[in-house]
Image 1 (cartoon, rainbow, N blue to C red):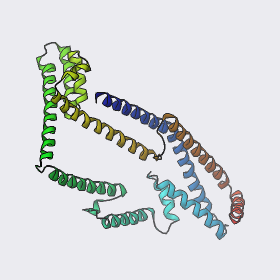
Image 2 (image 1 turned 45 degrees about the vertical axis):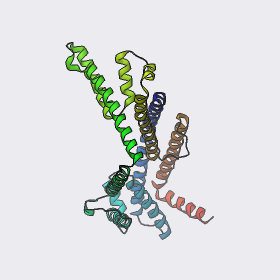
Image 3 (image 1 turned 135 degrees about the horizontal axis):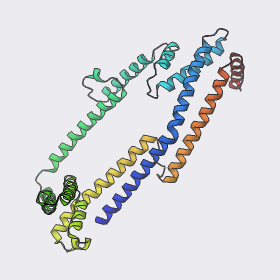
Image 4 (image 1 turned 45 degrees about the horizontal axis):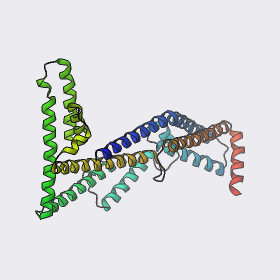
Length: 329
């Protein structure tokens, strides 16, 4: 069990390092490209607006330019960045203002959530989709807590198997508490007169307290080995009952480590929109980053080329004719 926990810890540390490296590289490489793309798209919005203010456009030409402007302003505003100038242009070319549209969407989502049985409470306090999501998560947490309470009540009925399990859990916690008390007594900083050693014991006491609060038997064992200069074989000389109690705690700790690792991976995939089928290796993540950077650079180039076209009305008209010709093919 100790070896399994050690391997699980090492694996989780490796994942955390891998994820942190990808986040760092993702920000360093894609954030500048994203800012550049946003700036170029923003320039496109103003260029389209200037062109549409000019006379001499056919109805078909005007329709294409307005559609482009609507799509670009929507994309910019949906990134969540507050931009009043872009919002003003959005409102200029839409029948419904951006703020009104977002409110209508939020009202619809509220209705759907209530139809699904969510209690939104003071719905007026929900000002955006993030507020709504938070309220729904709170509802789910309350439901989960109530379900857990009901399961716990059923579980604690004093049948013989349940009583044995309860007794075993109590003994395991007692074993953990006894080990904690022993270590706390050994390192208690108040009993140390030397200032340097007292500081060391303060840090060690903090480690012991944290491990005890987290039911981290593995760390308590490691501290015990450091203090007593013993080795893992010493644990094998414990009596059978105590070993069972320790193994129960270690099994719970291993399960918690694995659950935490799975949750960490799920959050990481959701954060970056990664496929559940993608094996999370350094090479694969590097390939994802290269692909995204290449796609973003291509879009920046396309937008810059479009800006050059939009800078001249005559060139824009020629481009629109070619656009209509290609759409008929």
